[in-house]
Image (cartoon, rainbow over all chains, first blue to last red; front, side):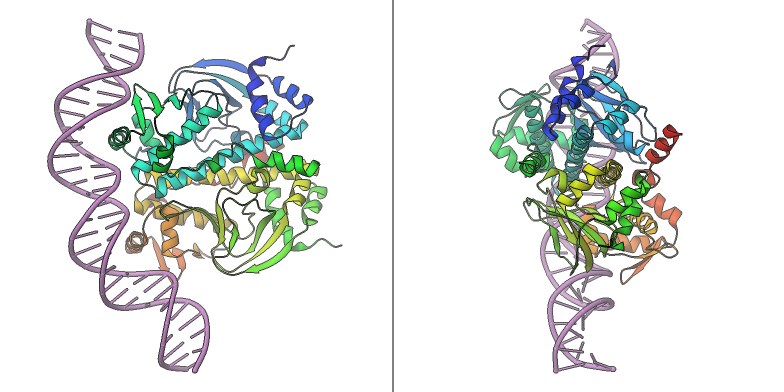
Length: 252
Length: 252
DNA sequence: CGTTAATTTGAGACCATTCAATTTCGGTGG
DNA sequence: CCACCGAAATTGAATGGTCTCAAATTAACG
């Protein structure tokens, strides 16, 4: 059985979080999975369920969200191609939130049992997976700050900055431009605002010359000003995990 | 060198997250640490730093927070005695937020290197630590929803419910009552509100007979109604981690 | 090319904020 | 033990950022 290259991006990203041996990489590439094409708004995980599989986004975008009693929806995070959207369920058992596709997507569903086995047998991979969940966690913290203590324009600008940097890291941008995978209603659900107000905020950001945005195609015209408008500082994305350096330093 | 019982609560809590062997427990109890008494508002971790130690709260309360450009503070989580407040820094390197004591506290500072070694040598302990960070993560997600999509009264009621359940789990309550370790200004920083409005909300909750609160002593008079007022559902606290059951089931 | 979703704009209402002042609480020293 | 002081809590009045409601326009998609 030849290892399928579909999981190569996974091995590649995890290798950025922790040093992986050839054996580690091979074990990742040998994970069993089922490739699945799904439409927009497809539910990958439902709150309260105990999923038996983990979903790796091969193509397309997804988001996690919760719904309050009176039907308001809060989006908790956005996921880009190459990300495992529900790793935590393997360890926590019951899903505490929903995961849904933003766009048409291709996912690889990996049996949780296989992931458990991988964690058990390849501690370095487990370490990398842990770090991935910790970076998720850091992004959640920043989102708490964003919706809790920033005004509407700052919130939206901050989100657009975050997406720019993460898209760049994923190779999905060209010259500070990317295809925004969110409707204005979904931007509102990310930022705790109403769609109407998001529309006005975007108009203001356009008016100031910070961005251009038409038919979902976003371009950041003045990154410095957008970062300032969004009170944005990228430390929380941990794109240069210090752990690697620290480990290398400790080993040398 | 006899193992100090000070770390026993840590071993106990981690054992709830993953099955620990005698060797695992001994390794935890053998961790080196320095006991330190600190005053209120003492900084345990500062954003941007690369801490060399982890802080275990032995007595007292702490909180994590970030400050926006214009000086607004958002509290991201509250920590009870027995919790490791900055485990993630061992793996991420640079702290992306501040940690500060809410009250006078006693902490055990554990060298990160020792924790790293523990993770490497006792995979079951590493697993438990990972699960602890995942539960943290789930609480962050709920807080995003709380500040993003709930009105003021619901936010405060939700927070009071969360604290009640966590205090109960830590054995810090009597008859639905506990000592609230937060000022109204700090409650405001948790919920993304102003101190003035928190005061009015608390008055309303008292007026409805849901709680009594005087001089920091809180009693939940009508838990059912407070849960309803706070749109509260405890799934996200993962107080009964399903992973344990799942692992036991898989092993049996 | 029709149909539905998404975006855009306006006007009025409201929840939470800001600003300001007063009262109460908690701790400390005389 | 009481007086004092700063911090915390409380209350009022006015402002304002965001929401709600409603309608029109444009874009997306089969």
